[in-house]
Image (cartoon, rainbow, N blue to C red; front, side):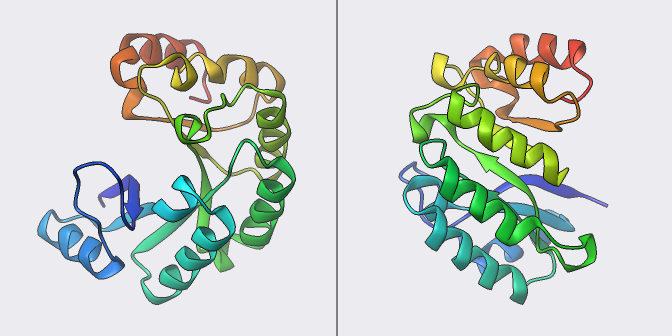
Length: 179
């Protein structure tokens, strides 16, 4: 079984194809991918409530797609509400199976005070979190170290494996079992 753990639905400002659910499934078929876990581009870029709701509608139609609830580090109360709305149910009923955090789009690190509030909710819900990492200080893999000191059972996926900081991401993953 092949699972793509990092996909997006919708328009991006980057020079990549904007995919609908149907377009993504067509690509999955082309590359023999059984499932893809996706986040909403709208939720990542602008509107967590509208984007997560739009994604929920798509997930109901396409059983090969599972979702990440996208949160915004600037809005911990609203983000925690979104987490419980989509993740606080039995595993068999869930269409969303984890959480997406994009510090660069939020211009705020996960190890911020609001990030810690969100991390507690994620930890309590016992789901993985996919965090965008690449190369700038705001999206450095280092930001998970402090979070992991407080939430030892939190499961973290470093999207893009740290990007330009890939060696740091490898070092962190070798020293933290949950990464």
